[in-house]
Length: 490
Image (cartoon, rainbow, N blue to C red; front, side, top):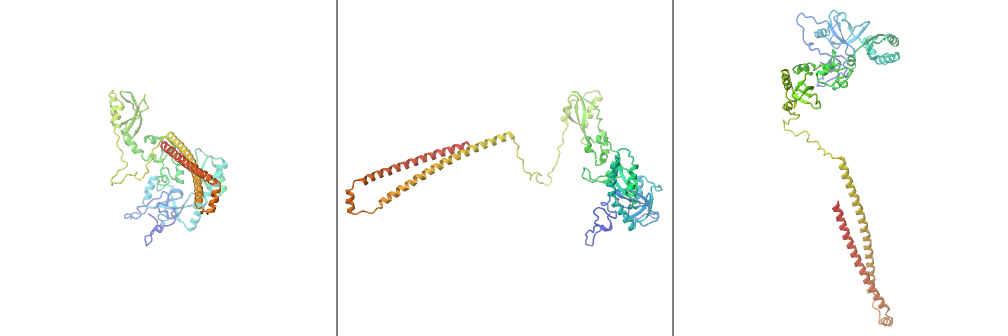
């Protein structure tokens, strides 16, 4: 299926032609647009049969024509040949040879003796290939300048593509337009600007999309640019038969018209609709007349509603609808739709079957938290914040009270230390002599008086110390009670 350059080495490693999707030989199906694989190439012809003398040649963007090999050249698929043009010669690649060409000619309704089948001159030389490549490189610039000329002339047309002939003497301008365009002045301007012969060719929207290519909404390459060769008309009736919503944004393709794939499954829908009754049929029941709403073709389900009470739809099976229609034909009324709807059984869907004994598919999912009302959450948050503030204020006040009490206790302890030191000094004084004793005895009793008063002061200080301790103990008890009450409030 590939050319010789795509073969493998001795070690089994593929060589690769490094053409980046544009095979020079044209034999790789992935490298060329609308490529064909000749599956009869390895088969020999029967005895007495002569090989078919007409070849299919491919040009830019999948354009193909048939040419005769009048000179009996040894040509195969992928060869570059110089063929007869409208004036001069053109260069293309042979895309198909042999007996399959007969099938393609029969499909496109081209006769062997028609004037459309032209001649193959020769295999392209290196000079022909160089001129052809130079002409292909000029196409983008001519397309850009051609659009500028069209804008200056104010013509209502869109220039989609430009294709040069192989000898570079002629260029074909492909355009799209809704109305008829007078481009006589445009041809003169283009011919004088590029010094070539100009041919204008109008194409449709679908042909333009096929030439440009692209990716569709399905995620795959466009059918018209890969395998679809004949374009059939697509109507909105095909969408109605398939019960699709008539939304132009979803039904239209990149060409701006209805998608070609709407016709692919239309035949299967038409075959299934033969068993269904007409949508205009009215069901007459005991409760009233019922009209059609919608249907599911492959599940054979229909939805009906009453004319007077159209807010509720009733699901019926195809057999039930046929039964009601038969009763109406015999001038009888059917039962209410509610009774028929109760008989319809919904089959459970088996999305996942634990055949091998696997765990559930949602075993690694994080369980979602239940949603609560935002108003309740705000109220609870506000209450919590208010309690925190009150607790912090009570704690700060208790801390201040405890600090003051600690200061008082430390001050009392310092005073007690001083008094104890003074008493220790007095006891540690040495015993005086008798003379001193006599002198002291003769002195007035000032010291005794002083000692008496000193003892009284010490006793007073001890009393104050005991009172201060009691007060501190009482305050600590009160603080502990307050803290316990605050904790209960929390």
